[in-house]
Amino acid sequence: MLVRKKVVIQNKEGLHVRPAALFVRLANKFDSDIAIRKGHQKVNGKSITGVLMLGCEKGSEVEIIANGPDAKKALQELTQFLRKGLSGLTKP
Amino acid sequence: MKIMDFLCDRAIVPSLQATDKKGVIEELIDLLIEARKIDPKDRGRMIKSLLDREALGSTGIGQGIGIPHGKLDKVRELVAAFGISQKGVHFDSLDGEPVHLFFLLVAPEDSTGPHLKALARISRLLKDKFFRNTLRKAKTAEEILAIIRREDQG
Image (tube, rainbow over all chains, first blue to last red; front, top):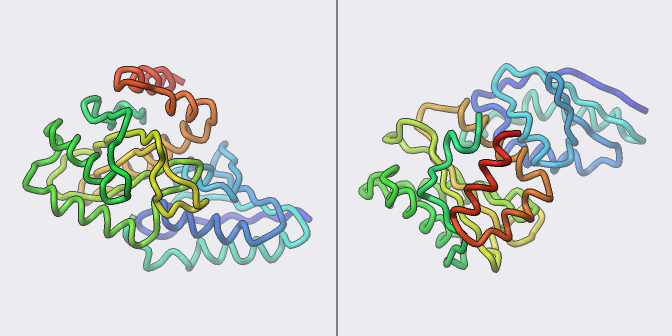
């Protein structure tokens, strides 16, 4: 199953190293392939260099794309992490 | 943004002497001090800030890459040092592997944008295995600069 959803990055510091690492760790828990797209750039959501390459600042809109057996659950948890899980990670 | 927009060409070392996390950070900061990018008076504060940041979660992002970073109120613009450890340094990396390539970034206190763009640029280059391996083999600061400059064109 392939599912996708758009999320706007809300935290002030953007998707810096620590949240990117946490995102990738979460993504790797799922069997599905995970991709993140920002504009024309699409990267592997399970690779931190990939996620950092996007340089997501506050206000960036990204699309999470999950494809595989647990895609729906992966999409739900990853989008929720981007919406809520970033608060408190103020230091870059 | 290009790497050479923020990488200080006088703060590049092909063979780091340090064998641990703190040592690598000190060695790279000392290069920035020698290059007059950082005031010697801020040395202790800067090193502490970088180590505090590492304590929150390693900046060893895997594949032999480390990008320690911190902020300093006195720097006016983003500045970076680069070093290679031939032996590799244990850095609590995400993939557990030793780190060979270090980009150390110091950003002004109030900035977030340039810092993210620099991380994005560094990640883009280092994602390329060929580029990583070529850098690892560089023997002099001049060679490192030439490799980075060439890649920066693309």
